Image 1 (cartoon, rainbow, N blue to C red):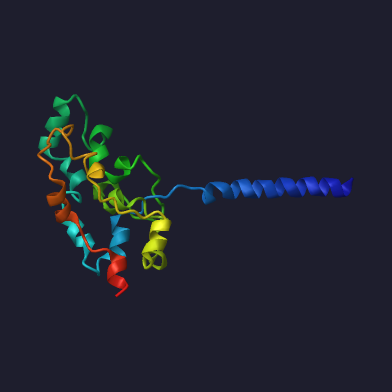
Image 2 (cartoon, rainbow, N blue to C red):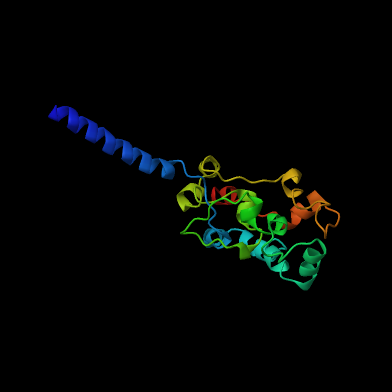
Length: 185
């Protein structure tokens, strides 16, 4: 009887431990922020500097402009920096469906449309050891979303400030070196 009770208690404790670990083991990738990417990607071809000079880096800030506030008011919306209708194209977090933000990361909505909007949340592939191996980075969730379909989720006629979108021309403006090809030389 005593052995039976010990076995039941042991199984209950083990089950609790497994259930306690399960959320961490199955947690979705989290945003870490462009500044976290910068720590390594400022060296090879400096894609961070390219992004920093782009309209994507200033996408959130743009929503604070008088023009954006007028557009939002004309559409019956409140502050564009808090309206999901605006944020879905001006903030990586909302564009990606509101994934969790890594507590150790440096992500803020103020970064606008950052690295992770095209490369996916970086918590699982951000480590240098993983990033040095392109296949390992991809296996850990890193993507390179170079498709017109990805871009036109925002660059389309639904945007009140839409201008013609030439995918090839505009991709050339944001394209940057791929680390794995550069480091494997």
